[in-house]
Image 1 (cartoon, rainbow, N blue to C red):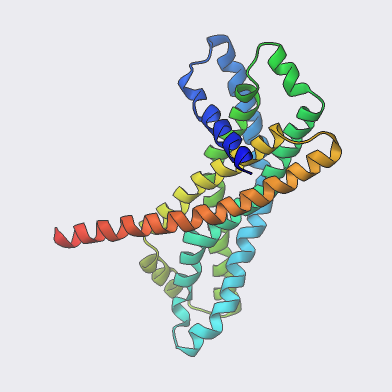
Image 2 (cartoon, rainbow, N blue to C red):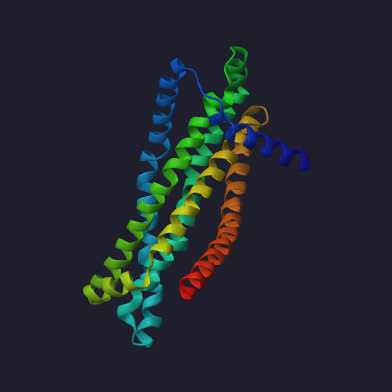
Length: 261
C-alpha cells in the first residue's frame, strides 16, 4: 500500500510538471486536437447524466423539506434551503460522483486496455512521452470542464426545486426567488465551484494512474476500473470535508476583517 501510494504521488508530480516543459511548435496543434477530443468525450457526453442528476436532486429536496417548512409557516423560504444545499454541497459532490462513474471508469478502461495491449509501451518506444500524449489531455479536460458541469448541475437543481415548489406545492414564485436570492451569497457559489476544480483533478489523476498501472488481462482492467471509482469517491468525500473546513476558516477571517473595517 505504501509503495502504491508513493507511485501515485510520483505520477501526480510527473503530470503537474508537464506544463513547465514547453512543447515543440509542431506538437502544439496535435496537443490541442487531443484536448478538444477529450473535452467532447468528458464534457459534452456527460451533460444528459448531470441534467437528470441535478434536476432530481432539487425536486427531491423540495419534497422532503416542504412539510417541515410548512409546519413552521415558512414554506415561502423553502428556496433558500434547496438552492443553498444544491449550490454549496450536493451539486458539486454529486456531479463529481457521477463523473467519477462515467468519466473515470471510461478513462481507466481506455488506458488499461492500452496498457494490456502494450500500446503505452509502444508510444514510449517511439520516443514520445506517454504521460504527455495520453494523460495530460484527459487531466486538462477534467480540470477545465468539471466546474462548468458543476454549474450546469446546480442550475438544473435550482430549476427542479423551483418547479416542484411552485407548481406542485403552490408556493408564491416571487417569494421563492426573493428569499433564495437573499439567502444564497456569492461566497456560497464560489465555494461550490472551487471545490469542483479539486474534484475534477482527483478523478483524472486517480483514473489515469489506475489505467497506467492495471494488471494483465480483462480481469485486471475490470479491477482497475472498480478501484478507480472507489478511490475517486473516497477522495471526493475527503476533499469535500477538508475544503469545507478551509473555506469556513477563510470566511470567518474575512468576516472578522469586514467587521473591524
